[in-house]
Structures are given as structure tokens and as C-alpha cells.
Image 1: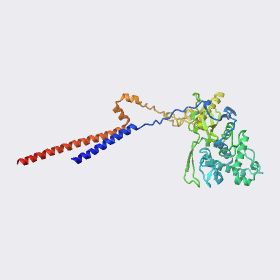
Image 2 (image 1 turned 120 degrees about the vertical axis):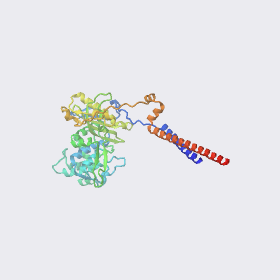
Image 3 (image 1 turned 180 degrees about the vertical axis):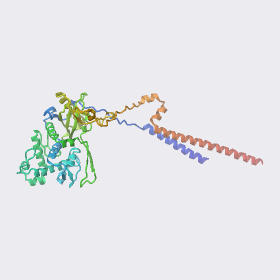
Length: 471
């Protein structure tokens, strides 16, 4: 009897302890709201940056600017020029070998594609490594490859000249050095000579390059206006637009990276994913932005945050937008600031020529900071006049059904008794508590039955003893 009682007491104590712990856990549990707040694009006067410029490539005019001719550091926006020259000089299908010199001076804090010394990499892969993860290593490899190819294609003394009308003699004269010495140890400097020549030919008066990647140097600088001019020139090359519009890329296997893909990278230009941010100004006016084709970001401690962008207005004008030197205190607002300048720039362009020549879905394209029912049903830029069957996808996105609005805590408290409300809000805990209580009840019933059996057994034994005594 005592054994049974001890076991039963231990079981009840365990059940009570579990119940207490469950209630305690329920009391301290919290729920997290994972919803996102609405994003508000700032007014133009609230944009904190050193300079910005909106250039209309279609008309050749500056639409809007702030200190657009003031010297700034470009950081990785430099890679726009590196990409432009690489696409002109190199064959995208050829392979370049990564040299030791291309990787020198790139510290752990440097943005990298991740290539290794001796690696043979296609130019097309290096271009993606240049523009998406902003690889400084890719920039150096491309620069060295361009100089090798330039001396081969446009030798000094020959008749062949590049787009700027020069051959290798221009480089040797500019560096006051021999071809052999330049190819052995001064390729990056030679590439900078070609970069500066192209900037000069484009009419950039406040630009000077000393490297291919944008790592800081006091003599490496641009202006916001010049950056727009260079971006406009690069946008003439279809492959350039393909690169800057790519949201992600996977790298193919090489002799030093056997796995395929060996790396996955995403574009650092956030407006490429959320172009809808620039579809309206701060006061809600339609910016008439048709599309954001792509762009290039840049960041160093001296340059701050910066971004150059290629956009299309609904009147068909190609607009280049550059925002330079967002200071560290506001660095997380770069996307918002560029969205603001882009929105006001496109609106200004539209007002000068308010004729819709291209369709764009930028205002509906809310892929990240938006619920599912605000996702786009079609993308891109198209020309007017097409039939809807040609313009919309063959299988349209189904119209989402409205979901019932959940009851608030106040509504539920008024509608249900406290116990029912607890069960509805804590289903799992309620089931656990119910099972524990059921077990306790069953054990009590078993205990009562066993105790009664013991009592009856003692009574029978007493009667038998009494009968035996009488006999």
C-alpha cells in the first residue's frame, strides 16, 4: 500500500511540476511582428550628399543637379570606365590568366570576385565579377588584359588605332617608358592612361584616374556630371546594359575553382530589385519612370556611398542619375536618396516632353517591401501600340483573393471568455495541459479503486478471523 502511494505521489508531483513549468513558459512567451513598415522616399531637400546630377542622354542636357562639377571620389563607380574599355578591347569569350600583380594591394576589406593566382577566367565572367560583387581583383585582371591586347592590336608605328585614334605609342609616350617595362610592371598605370584619354574624349573636364578599381587615391577623382557622361557612353554598348541589369550571377568552374558554380553573387544596386521606390516623389506625384536599367555602386571611407544609374522615362528619354558622397551618418539611406533624385529627375524630364512613348511597370514592381497582392504582373519597358495579348504574358498572374482580417486582441477578449480565449491563442499548450490533467484524473481513479480494494480485503480478513475465533 505504501509503495503504491509513494509511486502515485511521485507521479502527481511530476505532473504538477510539468504543469507549472508549462504555465510559466506560457507567461513569458512573446510574439514577434515580422511585418515591414512602409518606405517613404525623402524630399529632394532632405537628400544628404555632396553632389548629384541627372543627365538627359536623349537631349544632351542636364535636367537637375547639385554641385555637379565639384570634385568627388568615385570609389567603385570607376568600374564603369573599366567595363567600357574592356568591352571595346577584349573578346568576351577569351580567357585571361590571373597574375600575382593583379592581386597585390587588395586587403581583406577589399570587395573581391575571388579569383586566384594562375586562374584562367573568361572575360565575360570577369565582367560579371567586376560589376556585381564589385571585384577589385577582377578590375585589375581586366586592366592588365586590356593593356596586353592593346599593344598587340594597336602596336606603336602601325596604322591601326583604337576608338580614340591612338596606338601603343600614346601609352609609352605618356609614361615615358618602354613597351617591355610597361608590360612587365606598369600595366595598371598604362590602363589608367587609356581611361583618362577616353574621359577627355567624352568631354569630362573634372576627371582623373590612377587605377581600374576605384580604391582611394587623392589623384583619383571625378565629378557627378562627368560620371553621368561616362555612364551615358557605356550605355551605348548592349553588353554593358546586360551586365548592369543582371540581378545575380553564378560563376563557371575554372582550373582553380573546380566546383560549378563555384560562387553566387548578387547585384549591389538595390534599386534594381525595388525600382518602384522611384515611381513617385515625396509628395506622391507620379515620376513617369518607365524603368531602371541598372547602375554601379561605390563605397570607400573617403568617397562615402555613391551610385550611378541608367533609367528610362516614359517619354522615351534615357536619363543618367549620379549621387555622390552620401556621408557615413546617412550611408544606409543611399537607396532612398537615389530613388528621390531619380523620381524628381524623371518628373522634370516628363514635364518638358509629356508624351508617353514607352510603357513601364516600375510603379507596380514591388518585389521586396510589399505584400503578395502588390507584386508585378508584367515587367520591363515596351513600346506603345501593341495589343494586350502581345503586351501581357500568355499566362497572367491570377488576381489574389482578399484574406480575412484577423481579429484584434480587444475583439477576441470581448467575444470569448478568458478560458476559451486562452485555448484559442495557445492551442499547443492547452492540449498539453489537458493531457496532463487527464492523466492526473485517471491516476486518481486508479488510486481510489486500489484503496477501496484494500479496505474490502481487510474487512474480509477480519470477518474470517472472527469466525475462526468463534469456532
